[in-house]
Image 1 (cartoon, rainbow, N blue to C red):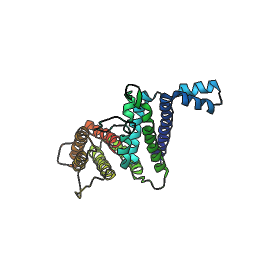
Image 2 (image 1 turned 180 degrees about the horizontal axis):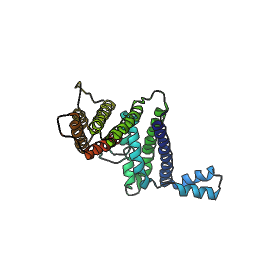
Image 3 (image 1 turned 60 degrees about the vertical axis):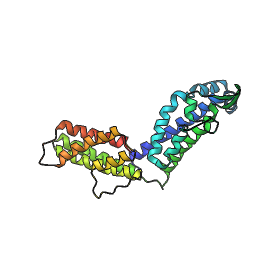
Image 4 (image 1 turned 45 degrees about the vertical axis):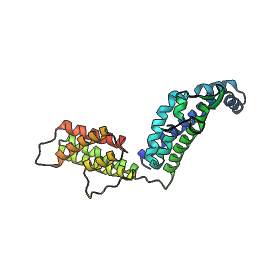
Length: 271
């Protein structure tokens, strides 16, 4: 197992641990008496342990968004076909005539929404968000199981290791003054990475030898990257093209430095 794979697995374990703590926190918030009774039984009435456990629980409303962002990125990378499901447990439907227990989502809980009938009968409150969060957490755990499984396609992880090595080589060439060579290597890394992103999102590439511009246009049209990302990567492609055409002007050290940094940034943010 590569160091990158091992580190990713460790970070995923930490994400799951935080998710379990958040699950306890939302249950405590919604059902405090029942939850504290269970905690008391688990610690056999030890007041010090009970107090410490409850005190260490995170605040769901202030901690969830950071967890959600990280977990969403994991699902997008490891199980892209389940991303829409993961998001659906947070976002409420665009068209929602009435708010019920079934369509009450985590976003409603974060806003403190409580629906009553006749002024006293509770139709839906924060407790309705508990099963939605549990499903999100289960998806992250499924991603971990997939990562540990021999069935997982490790192409992306192994490819990332190779790309890191190639970028290091490009950096060494740039430092030695071989600017065109450094830019050319970055261009190859970018093309390969964008090809993989297209494959991950089932975006068909029809051109036999597509350029970076062709690939990012497909990704933009497919909604995988934003217009801002498209413009940013296009600027990297312009520098790469400058390096590939010997009859043009020489690229500057600053342009190559930007290309190196931009290539690394694209690999981290576009997947």
